[in-house]
Image (cartoon, rainbow, N blue to C red; front, side, top):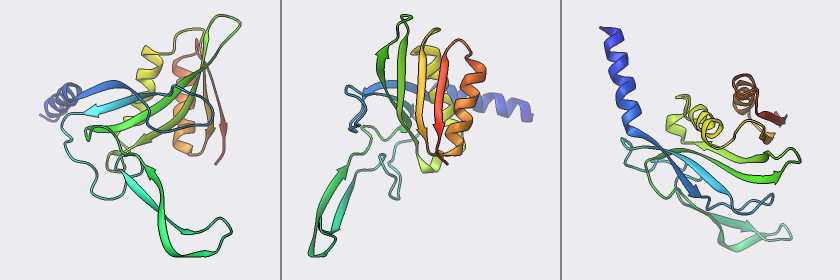
Length: 174
């Protein structure tokens, strides 16, 4: 009975999840024309209730000026854009860094983010698996850049193990 329930749950999850290719609304210093691979779960129809950076639009407030002095009247700071569709539960921003002399493409992972309420469900792992299966090909190189979290380091190690034909690198910063 337990096996049947688990199988039905997996089938329902697979039907409600799709990958979308978008242009990233975020700006990065490393490259232009940043692409976004988004994981969309059609069962999710609302934005997160609390502040969740890059999933819910957020207006920052500046309380201090350039000199470091406290402002009399706080002013609007940068506007952090939210996702285009509330069904997006995770995204991976990447760009083509350069073409290698061997003919392959060097990819750079700019940013990976999952919604706080879906952490620990394998969302980032699904994004990377889809990236390696459909975008990066044998002979390519993928750079994770500076990995700021241990979880991303584990995902990089998993990709190195599962896709040995694709060179995968990254610097640990935790």
